Amino acid sequence: MKVHFTKEQVTEHIYRIRGIGDACMYYIHGNSSGLLIDTAYGVGDLQSFIDTAFDQPYEVVITHGHADHANGIAQWKEVYLNRLDRDLYYTKTAISLRRIMLKRTVPDIDTYPDTEFQKQFLGTFKDIEDGMIFDLGNCTVQTIGAPGHTQGMMVLLVREDRTALFGDACGVCTFLFKPESSTVAEYCRTLQKLQSYEDRFDIVLRQHGTCSSAKSITDENLETAKKIIAGTDAHLPFDYLGEHVWMAEPYDPATGMRKDGKSGNIVYSMDKIK
Ligand SMILES: [Zn+2]
View 1 (cartoon, helix red, strand yellow):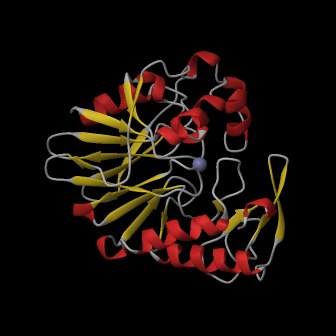
View 2 (tube, protein in one colour):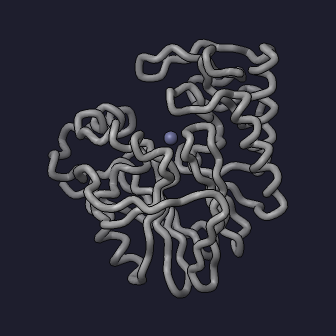
């Protein structure tokens, strides 16, 4: 069985790449070089697809160390990943773990042989930090450190397209309950930092669900975070792969969307608030 990848253009320079599973990837196409953003769960031959689809030199940037974003990196010799997330990558490379995570969105994942899964990365990690610029010719990409979901979480600002790639930094269901997550109070500072960039982008792209959001997603996450800190959020029980945590705003379990029509929401644990 072969994993089939697709590409779809979303802005002048940005393409959304999909393989199997719930996490998409992006390719930023400049006229001299490109950037591949994330590699999803590492199932299938992503490298051959990218090499053929874009036919130009490019580098690989991983937004953060989670298994659904970083597990394809073994196909490359050098990959950008913030040093604070590198240990995290190594905790979830086992094929058995990836099968469990994929089962939710790929019910027939057991029919994919182990040979379809990329193995653990043996190459070199390159540093990616706040304030770096990738010059792709007619397109420049600025990095913004955005700790919260993980400590090494990076947002990428594609300047000419006035687009911010938020990754998992801020979304319709921002996960802040993991050991690698910040407290809600610390996360507020990241949201305020993202707000300080809002005059530079109009479009927010993400890697899950609808994969895009209105700019108000940042304000809505901050408003929700402040409610959690004040103890005035809805505080609804939420189970994630056996972990019992809390959802801040009332939501429809069928769609995962907020009942009041806004879209920012946060899942948190009681020991990671202040
Ligand atoms: Zn993540």
